[in-house]
Length: 275
Length: 247
Image 1: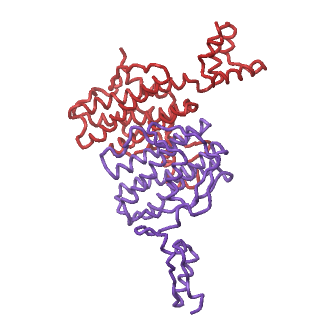
Image 2: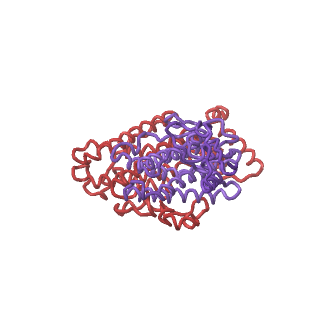
Image 3: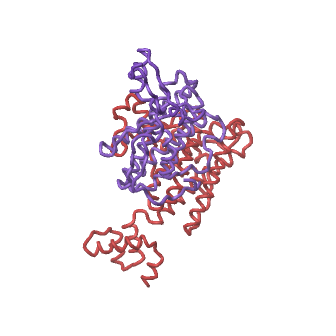
């Protein structure tokens, strides 16, 4: 294989770091087991792939992975609101302006993320078939008139999940400022949606402790860990002014917590139909 | 008339200084006179009552980006101080604000969050990087529901745009996550405030993408409420725009 040709296809920033890392390794630095195995097999592409991961925590493939993951979440939300807004007699007429706005946002988010993926030279994943009964956990839900309370509860679940999902992926975007900034501007809009729907349901716009409030038990994963009070090594529940300003409840409300991709996947999987 | 019984006011700012106020009372107490020179009112707009020190009239408050992530945290600290102070004043004047009980409960929650954000950043920055800003609200009427809610909406929207725009200058993934933890709560606030102002409309989330403003743009907007003169040293020369391309 012509190594130079292969190198020419690689992001120069990675190449710089790969070269630096190669020097370190040649000077005796430890290498990870995948890289060692690949080198032992004499496989340059595999070794290079391992080396790329080894030296660069946020490889471009990470950015694409985040974008495809975000696309799935936006597709879920977009179809949910598309069907909800189109359904006859589901949404209270007085609330339609709220959901029409959210629907328009989620549709636009799908389009925007698809464009970001295309811009990276990749193909956006196709939309899967969704199951809004969550494999029966939301028994009988099919956007019918009279199911508005269930619709709003699911909306809250999706929005609160979306906020935590984007937050959890932000570190993987730290070296791609354009995608990071775009993702954060969507993240904040999801938080606005979440607050609005929560308040529409008679709740506070913010999450207290790890409470799912009145949502069914299968949504608890969406709120697990929201009771964290350790922020950057500081226990914000024991700051001197916290006790007189809402106490531990306020300390947990004041910070939204991230979810990992695995945690979000576990939340979302029930909403994807099994064929 | 003895000179000590005459108080000469040559600029509007003097009216707001504690020493001037003390002198004023002393002068009144002995039946003296106060002389308002024409220059005292020359700087005042026709319709704007002066209710505090002029924004930006104080000492320079310089945030040095050579300090890396600490500069971003300092920038956030200035904004959180402003928000916390604003809501503290708003809560203190609930009695005359015309805000409903539900609206007061929402603003009281937000006040708590902003104080905790401020105190968290204070602890994170420590004595080395910490500072205290002086606020001023020349155009805010704390006895007006619409003025309080309108100002709150301005601050929350600005906070969201500030964090979104500053995130690109953070080099630590831990601090990036922390900024993310705070910004979504600011967005939740913004949504709630806008919904109080215009219930059940699209106002809670007026844009498909939230704004991402450069620190320079944010400072320019926040300066209207801060006496200290905000300044940057070693500010980043580039800013990556968000989707709204307005930062």
